Image (tube, helix red, strand yellow):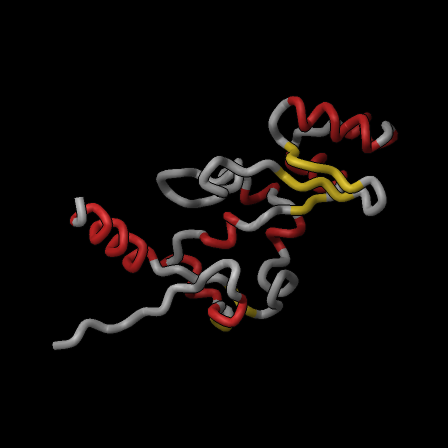
Amino acid sequence: MKPQLIAAAELDRLETWQKYSAHMCGGCVSSCCTLPVEVKIKDLIRIGIVDEFERGDPPKNIAKRLQKEGIVERYNNKSEIFTLQRMSNNDCLYLDRKTRFCTIYDKRPDTCRNHPKIGPRPGYCAYKPKEVVRETHFKTLDKF
């Protein structure tokens, strides 16, 4: 019997992304959590890394503090959008490495709440099944 071929999306190739369906998330490696996360000040307050009292501070000052703390990668002064720092493997700072679930799900930023309705390819996601990733990992190990 031939093994079923399950296509895995490539993050940089939007044409490989699959039409989103809610049932896909449970079997995915959380590939959407490796995309850059752009947030506004209200998201940072909801997450709890910026205090409500800081809302009146210049966003540039908040960005400098959060960059020093390793939470924000960059800040766009014109749009007032912060981009969250990612781990060296591109995982979001708030993605649990073992379970691949969001550790701040109830407080997650609007960018995450609205994905994939809003994003690089609205209505589609970079679905990568857990099994395909695991098989690829073991095939790589077999080469050694």
